[in-house]
Amino acid sequence: MTSRRATDAVVSRPARFRRARRGGESAAARRESAISRVGVERIAALTSLSAETLERLDADSLDARRVVARLVLLRALVPEGDVSHMIAVEPRLLSQRAGDEDFERGARDALEALERRVRWDNVRKFLIEREPGLLLGDGGSRRLDEIGDFASEHEANLSAVAGDGTSWLDVGGQRFVENFLVRYYD
Image 1 (cartoon, one colour):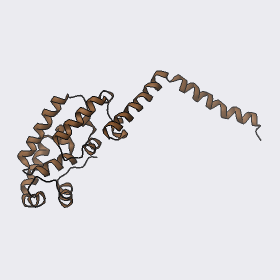
Image 2 (cartoon, rainbow, N blue to C red):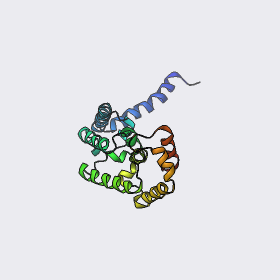
Image 3 (tube, rainbow, N blue to C red):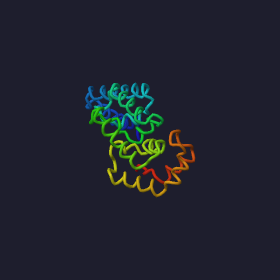
Image 4 (cartoon, rainbow, N blue to C red):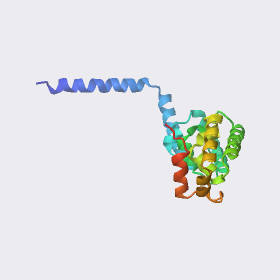
């Protein structure tokens, strides 16, 4: 049998090494990590975005003013859309690599290209909400052509679910568009 003292020495040795390793990590790095967690929590509380979503952003994008400005811009582009969902699906929407003006110009170009292919406003907005990468140009003209082909091939069905095109899609319309038109993210 092992003496208690020998067992304590075996158990306490890794604890000392752990402390040494933790101590080897710079205090500034630990402080910065704690500060960034607090910053993420504050931005999450301010914007009602999940902390998980915000943690996936690069450090330059975690400025509260920039995040709120981009949220306001997204809400202006897709007024009835669930912007929180859009950002959870596509965190690059908050990336500050492109300034707000450049982002808005690109997003408006994408919306205009989509408008030429899908004539119902509510279908376009729902599609953007569910596939927000379209605002960033994901898929390019090939994806937009796929959407246009689907819209022309299934015009009668889309017309039936879209109604007058001004009110938000009902559950049946959302289900139809999501099942047949939305490309899912991996």
